[in-house]
Image (cartoon, rainbow, N blue to C red):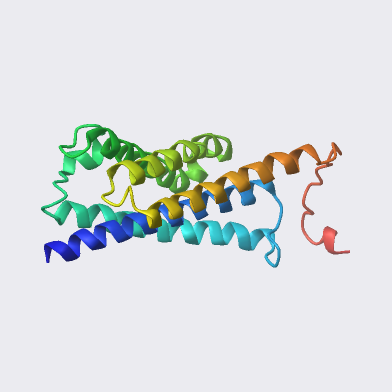
Length: 193
């Protein structure tokens, strides 16, 4: 049973890394306002939310599995307070920081209507801190950190996020500076005629 928990914990950790990388890429694309080939903008935003929820589910499984695994020696306080773990405290602490930032992202998303879009957007910038902390955690904490397959996964994730970031920055420089007039929505049936 212990081996099963250990393998499941490692597997869910790698899955979380891939899913959160995809979340960051989709978030960059969503924020750009550009559609993906074959997907309208609203579908990109919906996919971003759906993949975020899947990543959150796998993150929960990852943490719970390692809390139950006696080999991992993860304590409940290690999940909340960074850099206090018995095993590789610096690398584990980065995972805890990433988890804490994910909690902030989820909470701000759930409270988006109450805190306003501007505050939500400002808090959502925490994703750009969360993702590199999670990548560093995966490289430094995992027992597979020297294996070629994990390094391939990490490089692919970093490449995807980096490419999306470059695409976003380069795409901005080619956007024309055309002022967009805001038109108020029609009231009543007047807008239909």
